[in-house]
Image: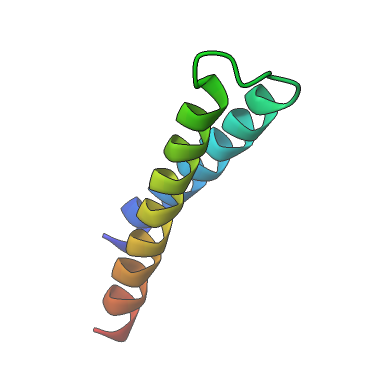
Length: 60
């Protein structure tokens, strides 16, 4: 299970880099930047939750 969580966290890290790269230079037209920011925050919350799961698995 911990291996699966590690893999998910690695994939999310890659996705976050792509997300950050795609927002560079985007004007806030039609709320595009706001949508990217909401997605970034949601993914960040997911990472925190998965880190918590990983620590609980490690403690078991």
